[in-house]
Image (cartoon, rainbow, N blue to C red):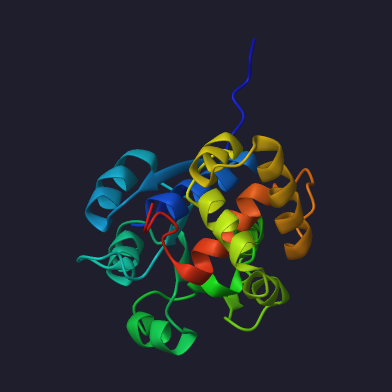
Length: 219
């Protein structure tokens, strides 16, 4: 008789569709049962159904309730839930919003995360009752991104927007092989190796989005 394996449940609340998808996929690959939500109102309904172990939420969700208010409500309903804020706000700005409302919450600045796999590592620490405070800063990967040529940066943007090599080739009127070589050079320049834990395409997309925002702008 088959035995169901218990999986930790994470509710990911992020109004940016690409970032939400990347984060959910990363948690899923690490064995979590990850459920996405684009707003706090939707997240509150979902939480009633799935009883999450962990809430990963942006602070600024584009509308009320914001992430801090969402976490406060969920903590009132389920004091056991671990909370990790993922935001572009500085730690000080986030602390002002979260002070005295969400005890033991962790904070990760999007600009300080070089890959979604690193974000999952931070979440593992949160679930182990090791609060995380990850600040933004001049990371090596971000410096390398800013050092790409204009053509390489455009290739990275198209990758982050979800385009395949064939789609990039058609858009840039070059061969697929030329795009493949360009993508390889981008990954090499960024220092992203293809390992079991971190796919370079996902890592590059995450880094670009955290640095420049929505890569679909201008498509």
